[in-house]
Image (cartoon, rainbow, N blue to C red; front, side, top):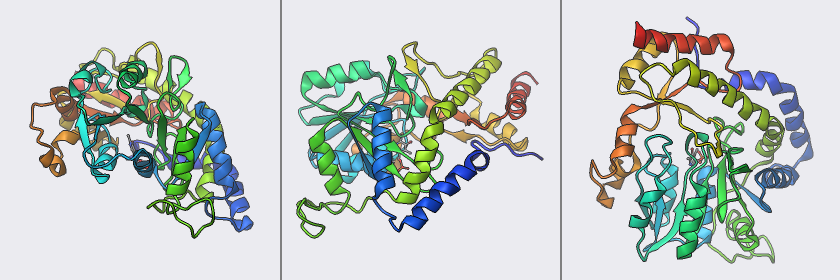
Length: 370
Ligand SMILES: *Cc1c(COP(=O)(O)O)cnc(C)c1O
């Protein structure tokens, strides 16, 4: 039986293997393996791509969030407002610093947190709004920024899934006080291991992050410390590979958009909800998500036909076992809860060929129409 994975990274490598091997060889022969010229070049390239002045490479996307919140002094007694419908790391970093995540319910069409509900979540302890560009679609950035500005709050964009996505004609990453990317292998710009980056226009924040990622090192020397920091460095092999891939990113994102359009059209007459994209946004489809009440049955039907799918996300963050102490109950964020029972990702990537995609579409049509 032929197997259709959610994302075919080996196929991607076959297309760019020569370029990657050349980049790897260059690093291996250079003798510099951590925070060297490749990282510096990648930082500049990703910052330019994002329309920001600074890029700070770190070990992964989780650390990119963590170090930024830490640099802003977020800690016990503080609250950070975010989405309950995201990967756990988004909220985890808030808790890791001793602060409290405050969840806003999501929009049933876009899966973005519902900015009309922000107002009721503010308290005197609110410090940061952390919108997530979930599945590759930009959050409602103008509304978030206006609301934050009124109250003197920081905005941190979690752009782990959305590098290259656009809001009102401009790439995400430059709307917040800072934004973070993940280079986890499956992300739209993914390495061959872990990696992450913060982008920002804020010179002071950039300096602070460059120190925090190397144990709070001071300007004087490697062995003078001005902060309790982290070991969160990006390595040269990842940076060199990511620089190769960055050159392909726009074409890859465009290919994903084209395949998403094919799914949209081919599933339009079925009882499934396909992604809603407001006219002022460019979605990059990190994941192509559909919603159906019959999710478990449909996933099983596809699995039997060798087609991989995945539930995204099966448990909203406010109902995670570890967050019992936050005091949320089932029913508190009803949209996130319902979507968590219904949403699933279909195979999608720049390499997905027409025959394979037709197979997925045919299997879904069979399921609903028999
Ligand atoms: C992947 C991801 C992260 C974490 O990135 P890592 O590189 O895996 O640490 C954070 N937020 C979101 C929304 C993500 O998808």
